[in-house]
Length: 216
Ligand code: SAM
Image 1 (cartoon, rainbow, N blue to C red):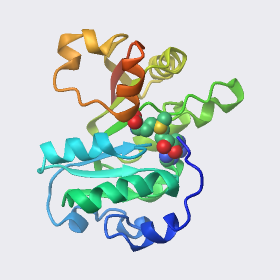
Image 2 (tube, rainbow, N blue to C red):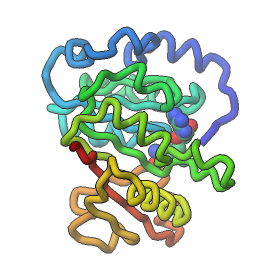
Image 3 (cartoon, rainbow, N blue to C red):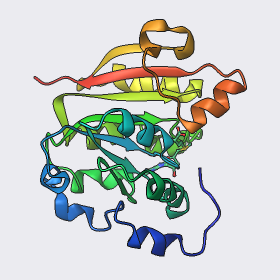
Image 4 (cartoon, rainbow, N blue to C red):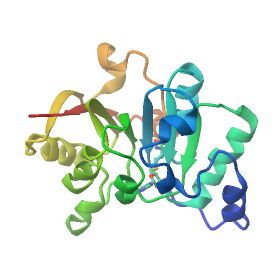
């Protein structure tokens, strides 16, 4: 998702109390930042952030941080948060590849990746958010008992992601389905993202996997 440049987006984000513009300063101190010891969950590539905000409203005892690299997209999330004012949600406008500069070892309990950009060309595989290059970044700050939940309707990206996990000695495939909305156990409590609603309403099947770290 990349919206056209929106005049004023950068300023609106810089002025929003929900967006942290110097996130590396909080590395290792995110619980102090939130003022509690609640677990920290991330959505990486959150787009307009509806999924994250729905989740945060349901779970006030979890701290949520949404990561989105484009100001034009993040602006929509900021506008929504101006209405909702959820105390357990903040946003970062950064590229996910730098997240190990933002979070300390064991600082994050869960990562959501929803409808990540597929980057279909082979030469762009390392840009996919489930590539082993990105998994190596997540491993640096995900707790040893933490996990990643990934949803997509893109079967090529899903198969690529399964391969990356199965070929890795650092990640275990805990569960997966090629048809989430007809898998009663994996679909229990599912919160739809904007893309999930759009693609499932067209008849696309939604795939989901859950992977956790193997700690030796
Ligand atoms: N997660 C939302 C959903 O399911 O409705 C949005 C999905 S949209 C296709 C993917 C989003 O991920 C885009 O807004 C894009 O800018 C963001 N994104 C892609 N690569 C990223 C990266 N390396 N770091 C941060 N955000 C990224």
